Length: 325
Ligand code: PGA
Image 1 (cartoon, rainbow, N blue to C red):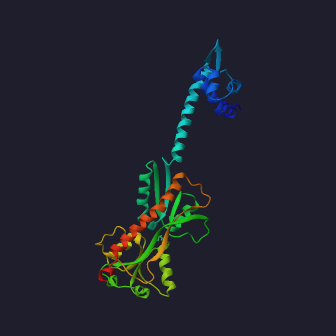
Image 2: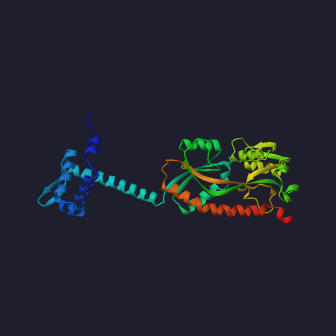
Image 3: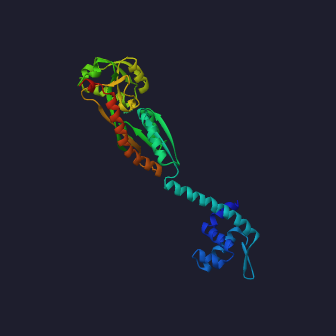
């Protein structure tokens, strides 16, 4: 079946349309050839091919003057529109390359929600045309999303132990502390053995939490069994349980950065603590990174220092044992 649109796509080139536009605007084959650095025979050939593909003449020469035919006038309108669209497209691409516009989909493991929104905020302040989305979920869901290529980047507490081909790099520390109510007698003790912590009620994160795994491994390696009083699925709920003096817990220092000097919480000085975990930024191997995504990875390196300073201040505010030293 004859499809005139397909016929044009197959036989008409952007170059021919550019030549046509120049002749229509300058009303001269010679001037168009000069403007485009082409020879006059080349210009004539391009227009002949274009007319043949369309099936109608586009120009008529009356005396020395070049005029558009009716088909030529129609084509002039269409070409102006097309080139306008292409111009705008080119500008958008230039913006994307220059980081003026773009989109970043970030997916982070639960505890990273304590800093990821602020980091994204600072990134967007530097790149006002960039839009972002943030998904916070547990480790299993993060890995599922990574395998399904749902997001641009992932922030993880550790690289996966299962078979996933990843590119990842460390950008900030994630120290884990034993945390108690500030009135707890252990809050002012130094070098508390882990065995002493195993005697206390412990509030544990839910199965699937990276922190839970590392806590359980730590006790196991020391040949100890923690006395788990309850399991809670959120760091905030755990903090409230500590306020309520239900027990101690092991938390990332990031969860405590909003606790002021008058906080009810205290870090304990336990031998072997803090457990030094690190934050990784990762993406599946082979993923094509956009300019925005690459810029965010770079940005995280600089943010790592800022996050470290924030952690140092939090540590100083929530350390009670120095008071009595
Ligand atoms: P979590 O992960 O919030 O799932 O415990 C944090 C981490 O792995 O360090």
